[in-house]
Image: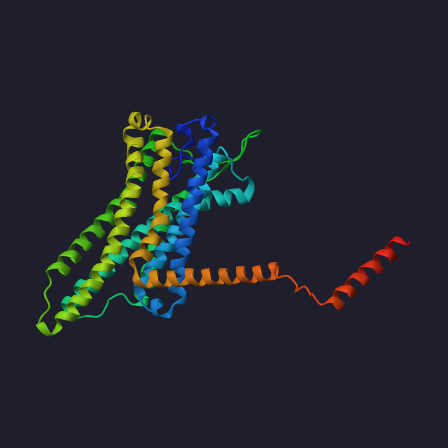
Length: 375
């Protein structure tokens, strides 16, 4: 069975009997995850496509940090769906053999990695905005994060997340019991139960700190400093007042977008982290949480990956305009295709009313009828 003790973002089937899950719950849960997968795939794909193909947007290193967040969110919702749906819909049945083992290890491993990359990408964005706004204006320097710096930051955050959660590759594997379905399960091997429980608690604390508390603290401090600077900083002279106002409005719009994204992340993931703290330290209270509430908590956490890209598109003027242009182009193409189909399908040949033409047509039909019936 998939052990929730080692993976804080999927259901622990040991907390409830799979046979107790009614068909309505299975259908609703599967449909809910299908919805967030669809919106996440569409939104994050749009962000990636626009930044990759639009030269003016691609030139800004900041936008590649948004792409990194989009990639992590796509990976998050994909792996979360791949882990949750089998637990709910298929009673945690897993693919057996070598392929099943590889999928088990990689899926469980990439889920926390993607979550870590997503939030730390937002933290890197906060650092970039602080340096670009506060340091650039105060010290009259250019925007500090170049393309090279952004690439190094992206690689570093993936390596960091990959190393932090590498123990998942060791713990998880597929267990096959004769006469029963294969299951993806993780545990510390050859270890006393007391020590194993201690490691699970320590692991949970580390995860909450690394993927939630610390990055949110860093982001909150930096954005507070940025907000204070933007609202209190005065231009050096009246000659630059208009430039200062324009720049400040632009920076405020970007900060508003990023703060909203961070707040959404914090709200979406807070219930899950609270639930897992209760699981390890207040188990009696955790056992009282209804199954439907747990489903809602996990779904809300992973829904963050579907909300992020649409926030970027809504608040980002360039992304919003490009997205609008893409949908208008697709809409016009659809209209043209439908019009061509209508013309080809419903266009009728012109009927002639000339008497000679009508007589010749009737004669041809009569001769054909006689010839057929004369056989």
